[in-house]
Image: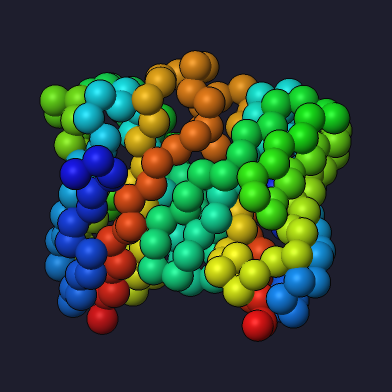
Length: 117
Length: 109
C-alpha cells in the first residue's frame, strides 16, 4: 500500500509475555520513528532510525524494549516480559528525509494497540 | 518540564462557531513547529509546518500562526467533520518532533 502499515492492530498479552510489533514504512523513506501513546496523551518518542542505523533510543523506557530495522525498511519493536504499564498504542512513522533535512512531516501508521493483562 | 503545552485540553463548539487552539513552547532554537490532526483509532495526520515567527499557513477552515512563544490554530466556521484531536509538535536541534498532549475538539451540528 501507499501508507505506513503496522501489525498487529490489536494485541492482548499476559503479563510476562514477549511481544513483537511490526512497521512497514513508505517505500524509500529514510527516517523511521516509534512513538508510544497512552490514552488521552500525546505521542511520546521512543526511538529513531535513519536507514538501518538506530541513531536515538533515548525514549525507550527500559531495557525490556528493543527495536531494529536491519535492512533499512521494515522495523520491529520488541517488548520483553510485558508489564501492565506497557499498555498503550505504539505508533510508527516514517519520513522521506533523514537527519537535519527532516522537515517534521511524518507519515504515521494507524498504530498497534497493546493491552497487557 | 513540558516543552509543549496545549490548551484547552478539550473544546466543544457549535457548527459555525469559530475559535482558536493554543500551543505554547518553552524551547530555544526552534527549528520547526508542526500541527497534526488525529482521529480516534488512527495515527496523526500532518497539517502544517511553521518555521519562523510571523509565518502563517492555511488549509480549508484551518489557519496556523506562529509567534516566538506560541502557535495558534484558528478554526473558522467549523463543521462536525473537523472534530478530532489536534496535536502540536516542536523540533529543536535534533530531528525528532516532540508532541504536546493535544486538544480534543468536538463540533456539534
